Image (cartoon, rainbow, N blue to C red; front, side, top):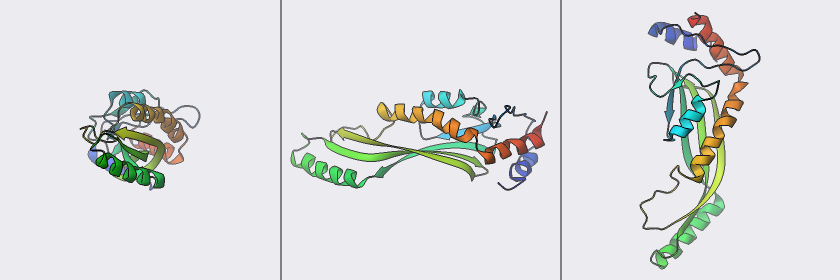
Length: 181
């Protein structure tokens, strides 16, 4: 990470002093950060905020240049494309009696950004198969049920993965340098 990346921005904004407490080992508490997510679930947010590392996470902290951005996407698998195409033809031929079957990888991405520069990112992937009626209004791969449970289960892994991240520890150190109490 480039030195003074955070400091020059925050000093210019004249943000009130906030001190991030650091633990005795490599674990730390990130400074206040803004939460942006495609995952529209209070359970997901509460699980992230409940961790010691992300305890200063806030949905409405628009002024901070530090952001946690959570997105997801679907990636086709070779077998999933073939199965989806075949089941779509069969569903159309049966006038919707047979379901449309899809098989894709659900990829959940976490990015910690400072001034839109990615400091660290993690991706978690799980394969889901879904059968739906072609006339239903339900969109494919809405985050509910099994997909949402899996997304919530990734929060612990994400927190563990970033707890030992050297660049984040450096970010906290730089933040403490400029905004120590």
